[in-house]
Image (cartoon, rainbow, N blue to C red; front, side, top):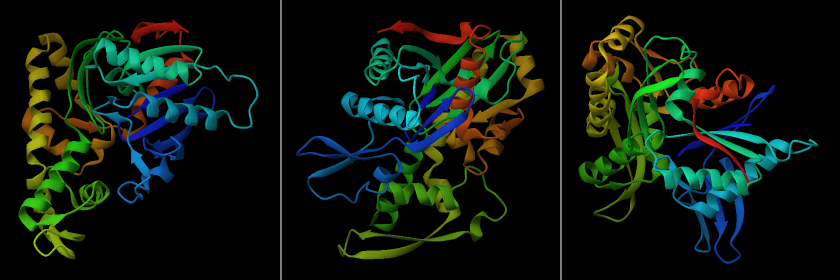
Length: 336
């Protein structure tokens, strides 16, 4: 079983079956009984809409486990759901994609949570490596491949060759920070308080990273709570405004890409110029982001065919070609 344990979404791949589960990484818990009321999509609908005794939370922040017990609950729930109606394979071998910049303690927390959730063996693989394999890059060959994986909590930039990471940089600025920038902009400029889900909706609907032809014509009505009157209000925002709001976190991502390119050995840099840069993760779906990176670096940028699923497809391919790709693991197998 391959798992992409993401800040925003968790995806599960089962050998021979493909992707069997794709759910938001959210758990709703009854605080009195400490029992989970909903996990995944059902829990996401509750974000910001729960009564006092119920809390909907995301157990992962910036790509790492922030709430161990809740993360374990969520993993258990997803593993059980995948195995529903099946006999055997209740203690599966699990490959989990994690950000390359996490500490030893954070790695240990992921392994521990997976083992408590019922895994037999746990293997960790760096997300950029998994994303590159999932995107179909020839990581086993002696050529330079560059991948940018923009998730919910972290952006991973890596140069790969011969099944290994030559250089990598992980910055804790990604999709969540872009949504937060929109949230802060609405509060500061329009005096409108909006929730996480509304900010994400704005980002998906009219957000862009680079000026596009139809940008200034795109309008969206945003509903929220007006700070001055304290009453609900609707405000109309333009696409160009939202691009401006997201410029700061986007510049952090661009700087990370430039820093990685500056440190790349010349032979591999030549390969990257020939082959281009691969963009994966949910952040790759932001309109104009590939154009922005290409404009800033002078290198062609390709968006993966299915950016959201790259990491989990990579973990699945590693599972199915375990012996050939054994060297890609960053965390050794643990038998609990």
